Image (cartoon, rainbow, N blue to C red; front, side, top):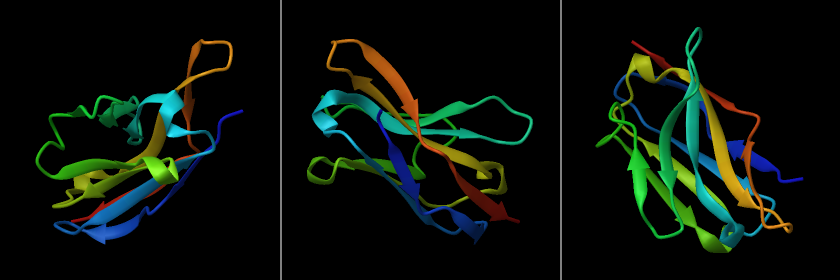
Length: 120
């Protein structure tokens, strides 16, 4: 069973910054992609950013230019630096990993979620 442990959420004023971290219990070489989703109250879960094994990154239009995803292979971790936060960024943020199993099948995993609240 793959575990994703997140940290770094909290309460911040609009315009502020937060950094989320996620560490996987498996080697990152078996994960592609690894990134972040979020879910606001009453809304569907949506992709925020993904980091692919090729080094390619993908961002939601709503966060491009404000958020930056990065990866540390030695720590099996991904990070999400969130700047210029807006109240509409308020959501539970979930780490996501698409993992290659020992049986050579790909499976999706999500962390337990971390709350990000941005006050106006």
